[in-house]
Length: 157
Image 1: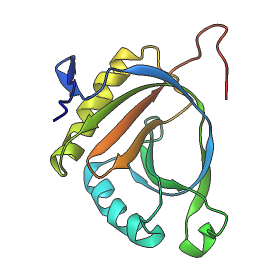
Image 2: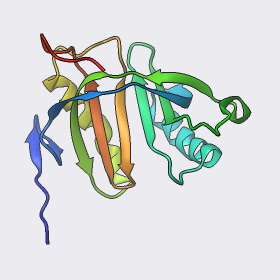
Image 3: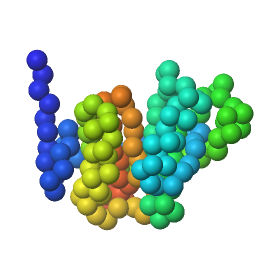
Image 4: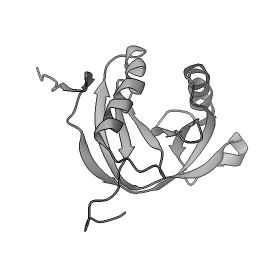
């Protein structure tokens, strides 16, 4: 039986060591709401029912300056975002500080905010021009990404 490695940073438990990672940008279809828990809790079931979950990667982008939260999924060739009433945007590529949290919902979802804040504290300085990202790898595993500037001499996507 494998055991999980739990890392405690600033009193918040991560299930992976925070690491820098380079991500490519991807075009997504999305629906936005206010960055407030009740609005987010209403958004996700509606969005998932609209686009379907089968074979989809699901993300959220949080624009802290605008106070918005967007549920999103990469656009497939067969998708028609306008038919769904959804917008399209770019989930920006670049360097991110990434950490993983795991657990059973809804407790897992309650950990997102504090874990993202702790990760952002480690990322100083964060890149204010890009959103915070939640990548829903599975129902019980979420990667949190905080945008960071590239290190001098590092590659860009």
